[in-house]
Length: 316
DNA sequence: AATGAGGGCAACCGCTCCATT
DNA sequence: GAATGGAGCGGTTGCCCTCAT
Image 1 (cartoon, helix red, strand yellow):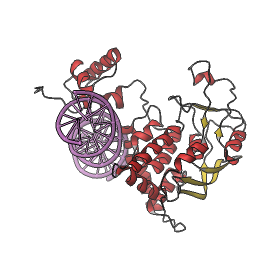
Image 2 (cartoon, rainbow, N blue to C red):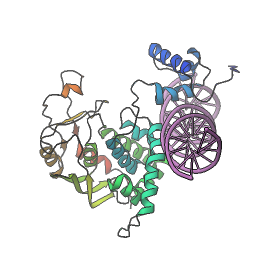
Image 3 (cartoon, rainbow, N blue to C red):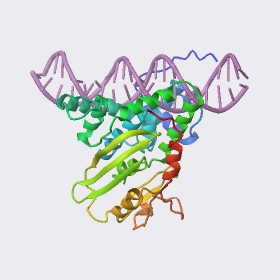
Image 4 (tube, rainbow, N blue to C red):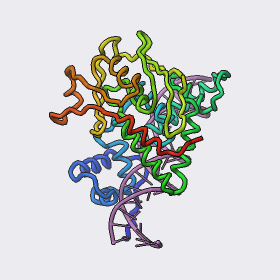
């Protein structure tokens, strides 16, 4: 094809946005190069795709990241590294580009600041683990997670051996099991953290929730050994019987947690049993689920998850 | 008021992966 | 099995805005 037509680059004009938006609304997604052509845009398909995904898509959430989103980003980054798209899938309405920019600007800045301030001599952790510890005001602790992360990344990015493919697959499966941070999901760090390993969770009266746990993943030790994983109390959470709701729009992991949070956490975490959140709706469910009669209740098959995890080679 | 520095963000680039032929 | 094209991803760049001087 002799498309000698010069492609436009740079910022998108409102007219271009409108063209692409109108085309996408009427025709839906297809081959991006065709979209670019048929919409009358002098842009390459790639550029159109990026513009749509990062800006024009109706479900794109704009504006500052909430503290909960920040927590989740930091935590997921400690697990996944720079796999922004994977991280983005857990934050509805946020794009990988947005998260990447946020990380590279805000979080790294805080990181820099905190590492320059703290010499924290009482830990034998490597610098990057203390990075994770310090960012977000010490909200998230990860013991040696970066080493594991790096090893995992090496394994998955390396050769196309079946084992690395398996690792990728299992990681993806595990990620799919993570709950999304929905609009009502201020406590997601608690829940997705607990699904990763043997974790004991308790409620403090006033300071929020703390973890005392040992994380095991991929047959190796991911960290958090006997460390306290503090989640500060959130403004929309009261001490007693606070309804907590979270949704997962990919309808595999839809989850509702309501009423007595302590009981739920005790049931699913202290006993170290299958994660099965028995949801008792107390109104408001319809606010986050319109999928019909059958309510979806989160069920993390923890044993199954760990079985999958055990297929990973030891990281020792 | 002018200007330079720094930060944030949108977009591009190059690469890999995957499906199709 | 090789070639090809499209999609997606992460890294990087460059523009614009804000703020300090």
